[in-house]
Length: 239
Image (cartoon, rainbow, N blue to C red; front, side, top):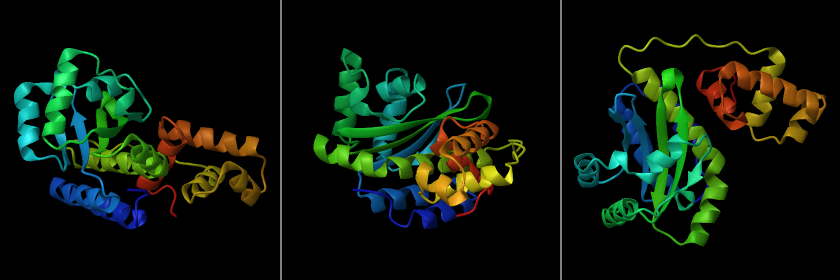
């Protein structure tokens, strides 16, 4: 387990996907490259409809729906109240129903460790991108630390593509970034620190921060990583 090998190749395939089956193929390959048990993109609409793709056993998916686990799943309930990625260990599993749900999930191969990224899209859309596996707490901590940024990027790419594929959806007008905002976001996208980016652009870190925050606001992003993902997925910056 670790950072995502050939991340750009996977992102390119994701951007070209035109069907849910193609999203499924990408998420399966992503799971295999990371060496984890499962990855799932899960969109819950305001009407309660569930949509997405993932690698869970179909038997578990059917059982989840049949048992109405959506109402008690601490991952869904906990992430709905959060904006930042969360390790499952930080969620509330104290209730009897939650503990029974976890035991059932582990029995169906979901894994004892999980990391979920809440995503909020237009018109109140809420989705989750989740990675899970069976391993020690120590190995899991190393994995989430090394993979966190890549996973957040992939989560937002999956969500953008899912929105694109949603039937009847009117595309959002693309925001425009200033040349300086594009330069600042591009530096961060290719992995420069803020200090390195500011130095490369011959500006102060404070000025860089102004450009980044301005771009983040225009993109409707929750944080800088989310802004980079949105700028990349919309073709506003190219790396």
